[in-house]
Length: 219
Image (cartoon, rainbow, N blue to C red; front, side, top):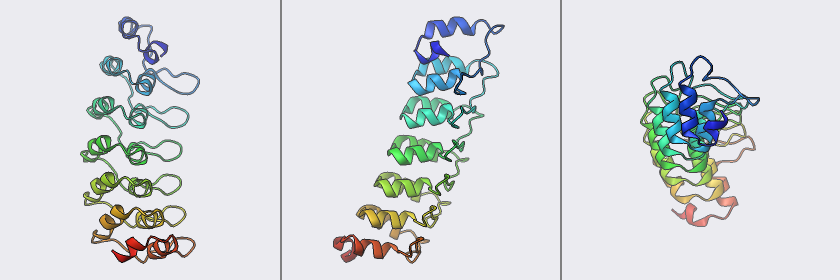
């Protein structure tokens, strides 16, 4: 694990030649594995070596629920994400202890290329919610990532009206923060419900007016 984390490829190669003494899925005190360590620190070549090893479990999660794929996505290691997604047994919908998925990571951080890679998967579940009720769309709308919102809205299974635990939809988030371009994209969606109220009784229009975004009201 230490050799993988520190990028010592030659040492990893030597150790992998001794399957009699190596447990490829052995965990450290935090529940991390060799693959997770390499993914966290962005060591692409070591990951390629590890994935050739028989019986490696690529979906193991450490004590906080993070997997190798979640680590790679969080740090925007695009090439590593691509390599992991090519593994036949990869679970792209795995959630950490907070309910965060890989797609949510990309939506929170604004990683367009990783979002595209994930959305190309037929097994991606785009409407999963985390412990606070957020979806990738709500995160992208709240954080002002117009391109990611656009990508998500192209998916036929997208649910644009999901509420988080506070009752906020993607539209309400965009309205309350003045994300004009995202509002326009959401309002074009045929299934958008502009009259949804949050837990405080607020609607998207009410938030736009309250925050003084006159240009949005006019448009």
